[in-house]
Image (tube, rainbow, N blue to C red; front, side, top):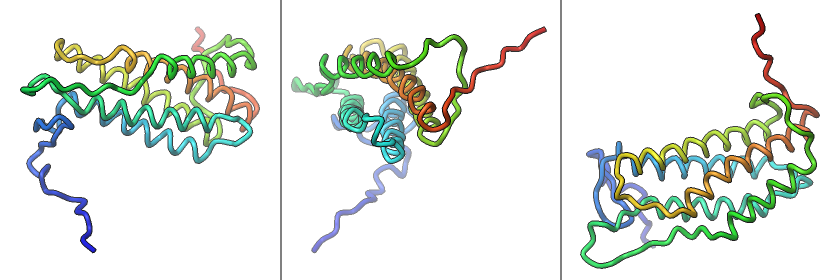
Length: 193
């Protein structure tokens, strides 16, 4: 039985291939964008492994991982230079965004009103939810850096909106998890004169 080769040596000179076939620098903004989404997906996998079943978010987290993978595939393609008309939809739907919004509203309805800034602290799952939140924000910044540098690059509104809602989802999820793990949130102690 022939084994598939994990290494190709194709990237040894600092370039990689997009899904659409072009070779680009490993330092490119496009690669940074989908690489950050991939990093986020890995942290979501870690969060799922730590998630208490009674929180009831595994199905949503599984959907998030699936959509992040399709977003990464979408961001890893640039079909503008192709001779034929190719498209690769992101796979993010309005219903995916509404699912996140429903979960945010559901969890938030059971939380006390936020009166202070909270620190990204708590137990393991809470801390990983905060890491997911911050890597989501970095993914969003990477998308907009790519768009700023390449105004002709097109990124579906659904991708941008999904990533934006996702950081809100992880923030609320962290608030739920800290109550489950530690009982209370750690608030920022403002500097006072």
